[in-house]
Amino acid sequence: MKFWLTLILGLLPALPALPALPATAQSFHSSPGATLVELYTSEGCSSCPPADRWLRGLGQRPELFKTLYPVAFHVDYWNSLGWEDRFSLPDYSARQRSYARQRLISQVYTPGFVVNGREWSAWFRGPRQLPATALPGGELTLEYDAGEVSANYSGGDGQALTLSLAYLGMGLSSDVGRGENRGRRLEHDFVVLGFWQQDSERGRWQLNLPPPEAQGQSSTALVAWVTAKGDMTPQQVAGGYLRAADHGR
Image 1 (cartoon, one colour):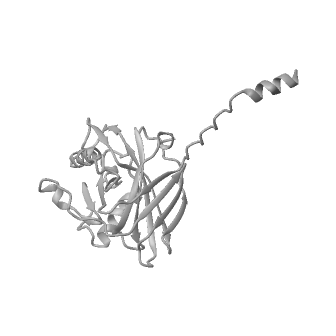
Image 2 (cartoon, helix red, strand yellow):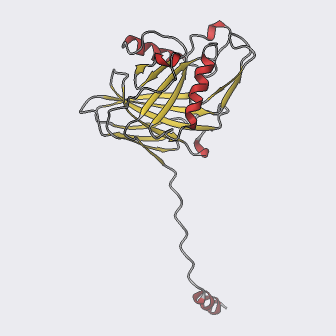
């Protein structure tokens, strides 16, 4: 019996090799001419919903996460005035104040736009076309695998550098019960759901981030940018959407 089984198996055609399983890591690369758009906003501010809607509209542009990177930091200094913004953190308010201390913005207010490290007050006055500026730095590459991040930056000219990373939540909403926006349903994209920074002397970083927090987002992106240490002006930015398995566990 064993003989016949061996013979039959030997006559069967060879099965094709199984394809290799796809790698779980995602790669993101910067592109020349990139723009980083930061919005400082709050659900407690009645002037902020138009800015939030405008930022959401950037998600329809074909250059999104190629040369256009929107980021929304929800500040906490409105929280004591009737409504606590669940996306706000003191660190985000402190970041905006750091821009003011470095005289990159005139004052701390919401909604407040910063484009490539400079205040963009023209949003309030004109057709709201982004400034024709672009980040001047070298190439930034990211590898992301279940929270493990490797980053390399080719620029910097020997400077000490800081890498900033943010998880961004899309398709978020809040029914506001108190404060200036009482009774309104506010919708948000590009909301910062986690923010980290790490310094480097050589333009290389290794980080282990926690998984994105589930806040009800429809999808999550990772965006990272490089600055000289102690200077908030970005040199380069990269990032994009995370796979569904990683977007909010």
